Amino acid sequence: MPKISDRGLKMPSSPIRKLVPFADAAKKRGTKIYHLNIGQPDIKTPAAALKAVSESELDIIAYSPSEGYEWYRDKIAEYYGRIGVGIDASDIIVTSGASEAIQFVMNSCFDAGDEIIVPEPFYANYNGFSKTGNVIVKPITASIDDGFGLPPMSDFEKEITSKTKAILICNPSNPTGYLYSKEELEVLKEIVLKHDLFLMVDEVYREFVYDEREHTSVLSLEGLEEHAIVFDSVSKRYSACGARIGMIISRNREMITTALKFAQARLSPPTLGQIMGAAMVDVPQTFIEESITEYDKRRKVCIERLQKMDGVVCPRPGGAFYLFVKLPVDDTEKFCKWLLEDFNFNGETVMLAPGAGFYSTSGLGRQEARIAYVLNTGALHKAMDCLEAALKSYPGKI
Image: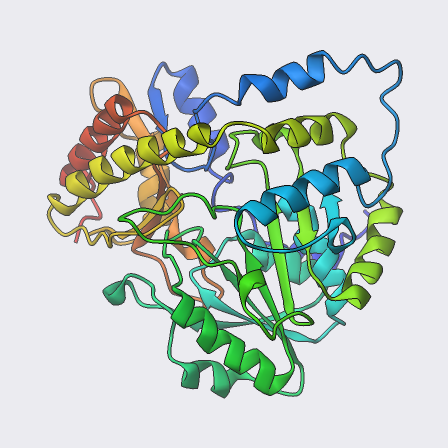
């Protein structure tokens, strides 16, 4: 039998999706599942974006330019101008989702054996994208005790070597919901300038911030013009995950020029998605404001319910739509599987994402899980009922 590559064998399974077969089996048994495992918003995609596609009157759905249509990149620049970031179309490459953006940037900035520093827990696919390029992730562990805030500068300094090329964060964070302050970004700026590194920031959840706090884009910090690289997407902002439209944004001309080579190799980003994306920029701000209000209601429901459960530790996140919690169980991998295979509460159960898959350090996250509060408040209350009942009856409760 032909041999599968070592790269393929080492590629980690998604902690978000790998339990899907167990969920499918539970559904076939008639169990209703509340999906809190995946960041799939249930808010309706703006009607204007769907209308733009239906009224496009295309005779041919043709390839777009590899970097994306200039008229769409101009609209992206318009959006950024509204949040106080001055860029133009030449600073942007349109990608098939932010995932492809991350892959292109890693291919452009790293050689095999180079290192990237990432505070953990982090978006699980950062591990996968790194492994495909033989890039070494150097994790710095953030603590649930302070809500997963930025670790001390000394922790970063200890990990920097001659092979270090970048620091990567997600702001607000997937999976923890932590919102980095401007002061924390200034700390990272000091580090990357001192050691001549890239500062890569996943800003997909930029709009979703709470408690009257504000998001600071790394692109707004002076002095990082050659260092800052942002990953962005329409998926969460406009509830359009299936449109598969993301983007790389950077003022570093050499990096953009290099990433374009990888964009050319995959031909082009989705044409229909770009039509949708351009229309989304013109969607009234009330759509975003109403989405934020709705997610904040959901956040408060989950925090209130979780903090009342015995043994559960639930920090209060400042952004995104995730909670990263500690549960009083022996192993959340086992617990999440048990929820789908052996448990139901009045014919219902809940699906979570086990925490270990969001860490690079072996052994961490075994009592933690990510919860995506992407369902309406009524469904979230029922999901919390299931979780509360499960924690009382789980054989591995500690």
